[in-house]
Structure formats: structure tokens, C-alpha cells
Amino acid sequence: MKTTVLQSLFKIALLLSCMAIGFGCDDSDEWNEEGMEISCKLAKTVENGTEVEYPMEIAPRLDLKKDLTFEGNAVFNSIKGYYMYNADNGKFQFKDLMKTELAAPSPYSDAEDMYLGYLGKVSSFKLESKTIRLYFGENSYLEYR
Image (tube, rainbow, N blue to C red; front, side):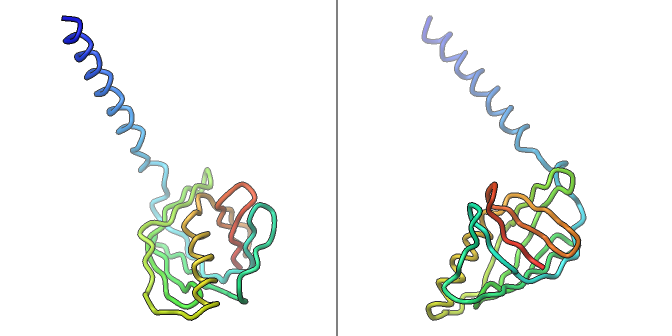
């Protein structure tokens, strides 16, 4: 009898937690429905307050489009995908990041891996006149102009 009651309580608790998680994940109203029209080049990368030095000089391009798609180039390969953002709270995410698979020699491949690693961690943004910063930490960002 005790086992049946405990199993029932466990099932109810599990059902309620799944419902809470399901409702909590529906953040569709948090994202803007129309994208930004921005075309820019990477000006600098800052991680934990210190400017990052790539294995070589790089200037990846990034184009954010009104239809919430993006495209550009990493160091050697082209990239594209989707993005989501919220202009009110500054949230930003890249989705379905795809890149061409051209084999790049070192130091191109090393620089590209570093850049794409930072790009994949972006979680917020700040737009100021001709500059957009894509943040991947409190004092870590990719700055484009």
C-alpha cells in the first residue's frame, strides 16, 4: 500500500515538473519577430576584459538580415544560419550555424576555430550607433563595426 501511494505521488510530481519545464521553455514571446539589417566586420575580440590575439590578423564579416538569418565569413570558410534576439532585454542567440568545409591550413584553421568558438557562445548583444557587441560572458565580447 505504501509503495503504491509513493509511486502515485512520484508520478504526480514528475508530471507537474514536466509541465513546469514545458511551460518554462516556451519563450517564443521573448524574441523579436523581425531581424536587424546590419553588415559589419569584426573589429576586436575581448575575453575576460583582455583583448584576444588570434594566431593571425583576421576580419570576419557578419551580415544580420531582417528575416532573422545571418551570413558571413569566418576566417577561411563561409558561415550562415539563423539568429534570435530580444531588443528589450538584450538576449541574442545564433541557431543552426553552418559553415563550408574547406580545409584551411594553419594558422587560418586555428584562428577560425577560435572565432567560431566565441561566436557559438554568444548570449546577448548591445547596439551602439555603428558598433554591435555580441557578448559571450560578462566582460567578453565580439565587437563589430
